[in-house]
Length: 430
Image (cartoon, rainbow, N blue to C red; front, top):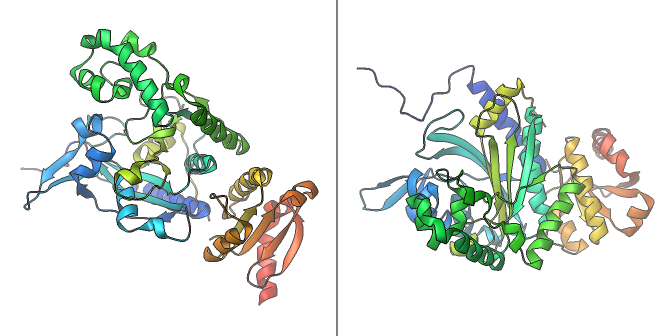
C-alpha cells in the first residue's frame, strides 16, 4: 500500500528547491538593507492567541485552523499566520524594552490553513513577513510597503500593483460598523449563516465573505473612507505622501478590508496583473495593528506588517517568465532635523537602498544626539546629517564613524559613488 503526501501539501524536489533558496537569500538580503532582524517562533501556539488576535468571526478562526488538544488537555493550533506569534514573542520577551525602537523583525516559515487546494494555495504554505513594532509614524507604513515591493521587483516581477485603504481608528470603525449594520439588517436573511452571525459581532467581516460576494448589497455597502474622522484621514494622507516621495504607485480601494480583525488604519495588498496568473491575484497583504500588543498583555506599542506567500511569488514569476537574482550591513545612518529634512531623508534612504547601499533613519522624531547614538548602536559605517543648510546647498557631510573623517558631497555623488567612497575610506584607515 502506497502512502501519498497529504492533500493540500507538496514535496519540494531538487531543481525546485534551488528557486526557493534564491528567493530566501533575496529576502534575507533585502531585510538586511532595510535593517529588519530575523525572528523564529514555534509552529504551534495556544489556540487563544489566534482567537483573541485574528478574531473569532474570521474565516481563519471559524473554518481554517488546525486545532488539537495535547496530552495535558491544552488546546493548541498550528499557526495560520505570522503576526500574532511575533507579537506574542515581542510581549513575552519584553522587546519593547530594547534601546532601538521600533523593533523591526522578519520571519519565514510554514503556516497551516484548512482550505480548498488550488494553484499557489496549500494547506501548508510558506510565508515571509515583516513586523515593525513601536512606531506610529506613517513613514514606516510606507517603508513596510516599500520593502514588500522591493522583494517583488528584485525577484523580477514587473506586472504588480499596490492597493491601499484606510480602516481608520476605533471611532471611525465604530461609525462605519453602525452604518453597515443598518445597511445589511433588513436583508440579512439573504446572506449565509456566517454573515448572519457576523452582523451583530463584526459586520465588517460580511464584506470579506466569499459566499455572498456577488450579492448586490455588497456593491452598495457604506464605504469606510466616508466615515474616517479628521485624525484618521490625516494619517492616511501622510501615508500616501510618503509613498509619493518614494515614487511608489498605488491605487486606493475603499472595499479593501483584509481578513483579520486586528487591522486598523493602513491596509494594503500587492496583486499580480500577469496574464494567466489565475483568479486569485493577491500576492501579499498587510496593514497596521495598533492595539494588538496591548490586547496580548504588552504596553502601548503600535505596529505594522505584512505577509507574503513564497508559493505565490514563485507562481507569479513563472507566469511572467521571469527569473530572479541575488542582492548584497548598515552602511549609512541618515539623521534628519525638521520635517522638510525628514522628507528628504525618506527619499535619500530609498535612493541608497535602490543602489544596494544599506541605509537607516529615525522613525521616532528623536533629537540629533539620540539619532547619532542609534547610529552607533547599529554599528553604522557612515552617518549623514540633513538640515536646512544641507537642503539649501544640496551638499552634506558624509562622516566615516571609524575615524571621524568627513567629506562634503552632493546627495547624488554619495548615491552614485558610495562603493568607491567606502573602499577609499577603509584603505585610509588601514
